[in-house]
Amino acid sequence: MLGILRFVWGNNDIAQSNLIISILLAVTLPLLVRYIEHRLNELPQLLVLVTYALIPTVVLTNQMIADKSLVLLISTILFTSGYAATFVMHFFITDLYRLILSASTDHLTALKNVRTFNNELMDVEREKKPVTLAVIDIDYFKDYNDSFGHDNGDLLLKQMAQVFNELSAFDTDFYRIGGEEFAVIIDTPNQRDAEAFIHDLQEIVAHRRFSTTSGDPVSVTISVGVAHSRTGETLKRTLKRADVALYQAKKDGRNQVIVSLPTQ
Image 1 (cartoon, rainbow, N blue to C red):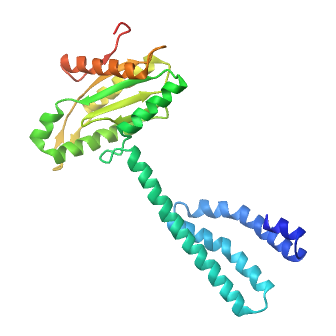
Image 2: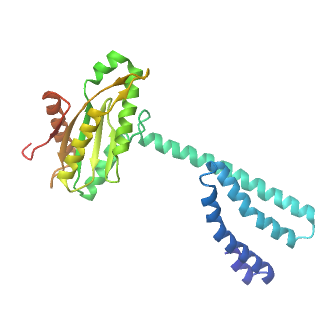
């Protein structure tokens, strides 16, 4: 853009140089990004890109201005301001991202938290999308905490979240909504597939070997209540039916999946 403007207002030779430099930067910067993205951390990447983008400007300034001390001063100002702006923006954006992330994720498991769960339920309801909701409870978690201690309880929650992350997909989101309670939103109209996914999840957890802080293997199970959304029903009511199904699963002996029936 600078090169094009200089064709209209300014020296054509300088304008041509500006335009050529702009085109070269537009072509080569994406290639440079691709080359360094897995070799450097975020801040060094930004500094390399800023340096690469400023060097042609300094070279062009050197050609335009005969006074080399003035060129040095301009170059120093350009690099100093460029680096300073990069540092400020990087840390500002990083802090902002962390703030947003902390408001939407559970600090222990890094899963989405109950606030995000409620917000996304409202989004789904506005879009009137058919979904399946599931509420998951770790069986006998209080006894586990009493037997192994709260540090091991926290470790178990983290390991359980890891299982959920392994199974998460573009249409399946997991949330921690309470102490040992989790929720799932499955964005699909296919109820049979959704139920099969939840049954597979329950079996995977039952056969997974978790571990204590001392490395000893432990086995745990989960109980799950499932409810499919219905036309004319609020998702708050759907969630309530999933809660009732979870209660029934725990009452019937735990380590199982109960699906809310149409009459419930």
